[in-house]
Length: 352
Image 1: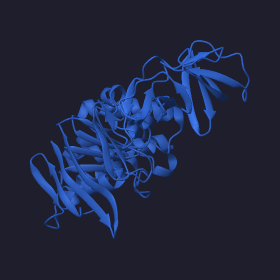
Image 2: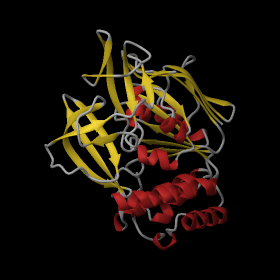
Image 3: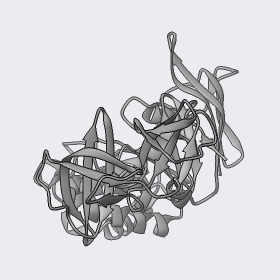
Image 4: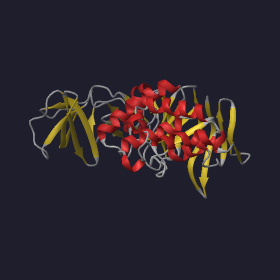
């Protein structure tokens, strides 16, 4: 349904998006995930037609809608797509019904058909009781529902969301995630969703592209990103809590792991060992596979305890059954499992 081919966007000499190629199947819930400034919103704006690519092509349902190599693009209004902005962007002088009906008027839909479609969409978003109110008379969460209703009213084949939940409180964000997934199932539209929140990505997406510095670090199903991260960036950005990355360096006839000699057999003289928080352990006494760390945080998580230690810039997290008998600032021992969960090279890419 959606193909992105060697897409690049430059602003002067700065490359915001660098040679991105992705193929997303029809009806997918596709999330662009990454930190601020990684290029995900720029990519979304190119999909919406608000930015022209410097190079590469965008294809919707076998039709090319943007071609940076030929400096050509289909008008945003003719792409059969809808964009939900982070700021809602509702018309303040129009009622909720008027806001939802407006794009249908632009399409020159007949009044009976408009009325029926507006009622259908208001019911779908559970905002029928707000039809005659104005944007300044409803809450932020309700405004977001109106913005979504307005976007889906014309039945676009591609829905684009630019961090639509970032202005909502934590409880409402959880509720709206459920509503958006229900909406996706009801409409069947291919959805592209931009966020920096990896919990949103992991709970909502069928496909995720993790971006950093304009490039896609990894593309796949959420479980693939968690179970088989391909780069150090993905391993430390995806997952709650993030994976532990410990430097391993050859030193004489042995190896130092996190600055201490340990009996390990790494695949290279200099690399990174990844240990998942749930496989990391704590020890009451120092041993040949322990690292002394300053205890900086403990918190409850899903019936267990998340313990975080810090030493010389190295931060480690373990998920254990019982909190250590230590105070914040005390030294505790993190014990490494016999083998890392994964190895990564100095280039940041997975080994093996």
